[in-house]
Image (cartoon, rainbow, N blue to C red; front, side, top):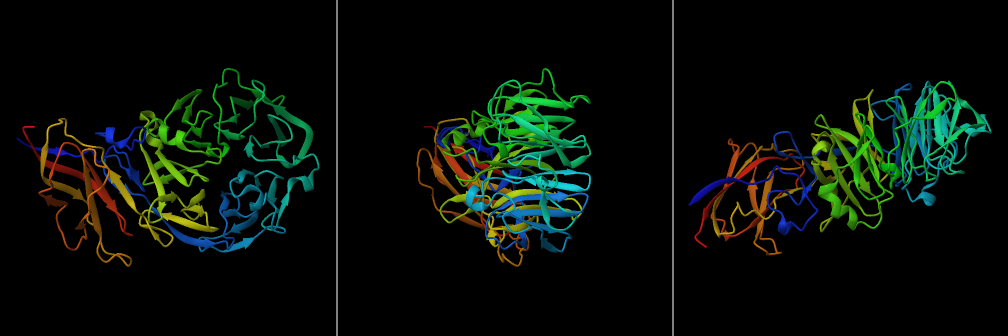
Length: 484
């Protein structure tokens, strides 16, 4: 009996069990995302825009709305970038204004807050700000009562709020409307648990204060001026402080149990089930950095574990189903390293999506770019061990792949797709079959492979490793089910 059966190539990535046990899910989806119709698309690439010349990671990147400029920080030095052409000027007063790379190993992110004409930044020492468009200063210069050990800073109702690392759970705030004026007695502390304060954020008229074991929400009561919002206490804690992001009202973070959590309202929901085993296997996770970036109109949560050299990505539009996971990374010839992007911002006035890289460069993210700098993006989609619903032997008569044909470009004269497979419990992959997918050589969507052997269960891999586009729409296999 011959059957024509669709392969499960539009499914979610699932790394929680051995891939030998997976049938209808994908154990590996790398440098790609699944769109609304189930097609596999190569992620956008990065074009080098500005080289800050430090050779160290970009620790902070921020769009300064008032000044219509980008603020960038690398190795403790600060730059202001004033136009889409990349005109930059260093505004550091002497180099190590922020915590130097030698102390933090580049794993402490610079946090930003904007209030009126000011932009403030911190990552473990003073709160800094550009004095107009000139050299940066620290707030303690203007008022000796300002805190001097600050990791996190935010703006809320004309106040600047920040942690004061000299005391557990202490949050200081500036004078209202006067962010350079501070009072040593203007502070409050977390009340529910005496745990470490892991962030200070403001969103939706609330002050979000996660600790290592609990989460409190405060608000401006107009009197004290801040009070805890009763009933907003959450029994969950953050393990990686820089993993915290807000995406359209949903807080995303890595919690104390090594789960990626979506907190909407007051109820935390674990969304990293498909990658739970992967997360448990990591040694160092507290240095994880999270960013939310727009790709093809969709929001993606990009979470990089710096010491582990791993980056995992979640499609935020699918957090309710716990799906949409994949991996991003740079191919090193034998294995993937982490994604080169570190700090991210959307430069509204330039309409640029910017990533600060691990190499001191700032990149523009572009869906029509298929390299990260000079390195081609290597995209992989694997199926599970597909048995088509039966353990009987099957003869594979044909594989028909529907794929978008790709034009040649300055980097790639002959776009190609590579396909390989392994059968039953075999750990070794077969050789790749290479297929021409250039748009000028084929008019049809479909590509056929014939006489593909006999198996009980088969795992397929689709690889596109050139600097060109890739959109794998579907694949259908014609199989003859045998009698044993």
